[in-house]
Length: 149
Image (cartoon, rainbow, N blue to C red; front, side, top):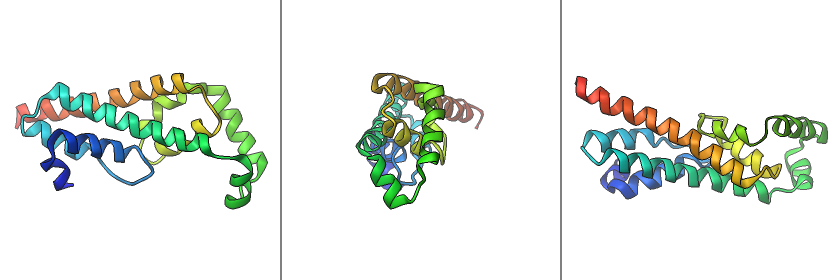
């Protein structure tokens, strides 16, 4: 974590990207430390959002590579379960991508949206908005929290 902070803006981008993949990682600490070290607020927000969005879209892309037969055979998931999940995703549509910022379930959501071939442009838009909201709130809390410190 410390080396990501030492790398400044590049470290924030990389930490944010990794946090949106299936790797367990937290980029919020890097964002907070950079803001507390008086890095540019808007640039930190943009890099964190864009890096996390790209990481989420890479998970979406991995999902698109998935094949139904492979999932059934190697993960022993029954077709009924897959069809049930597909109907949920189909009923909500790409708006589900807004919630890809959520811990634990966000990455599987992105992969699932890709696997079920949800519209990539809509997914990209909703995912970006969700991640922007997440980082804006976190950055604002950090920024205004420092003023009370």
